[in-house]
Amino acid sequence: MINIVIFGAPGAGKGTQAQLLAEKYDFLHISTGDLLRQEVAMQTPTGLRAQDIMNRGDLVGDDIVVPLLARAIKNRSIHPDPDSLVDPWDRELKGDPHRPEGFIIDGFPRTVGQAQALEFLFGKLKRKIDLVVAIDVPREELVRRIHERAAISGRADDTEEVIRHRIELYDLQTKPVLDYYRVSGLLVSVDGSEEISDTNKRICSIIDYKISRTTPENP
Ligand code: AMP
View: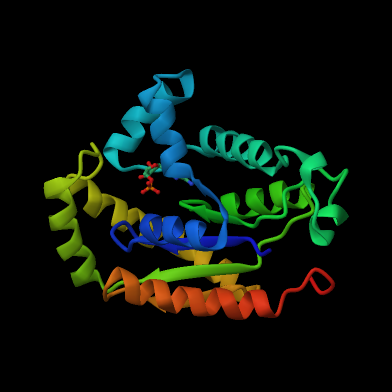
């Protein structure tokens, strides 16, 4: 199975697409935004440190988000019951604690430093990133969706002003990560300006193609 990073500005629909893809392909889905929101909801020390930063729409420091991601990747990499594996591909993994499913990571990396941290974490699990999908949505459409989302979302960082700030940060800090992946040949951009199902179909055909070229013998 392949490991994917999904990218997009606030309002591009990366969370929605990541969830749909996780269901369809059985990916292990990790959203750093969700991990952070859980910490905030539980008022853990990490959550208390992250809360105000998130409410302002700023990026939480790597010292907070990288350990959270590392823990989530590690926890989800362990096969729940390696002894129960029966089919040949699974049996190959018997005794190996790593799960056969791929990861879909959403909301991370947001800086080039985080991209390097992700490579390091995956490297320790003998995994690599196979595909980076960037969902492209024109600025006017993002702004239209932001109006809509600000009206219905319960998120403290979904006010119009904060979302505009998050889009600015995306342009400044997160877009350079796309160049980083473009250079390594992993990046595919997808038009995300239409319906959720249209974008989903486009991404699925890219993933299907990638899977067809990635076999256990030819990882
Ligand atoms: P998201 O749900 O991905 O839009 O993330 C919501 C908020 O969580 C962001 O605006 C940031 O404050 C914080 N956040 C999520 N992922 C990261 C990350 N990789 N690095 C820094 N901050 C993050």
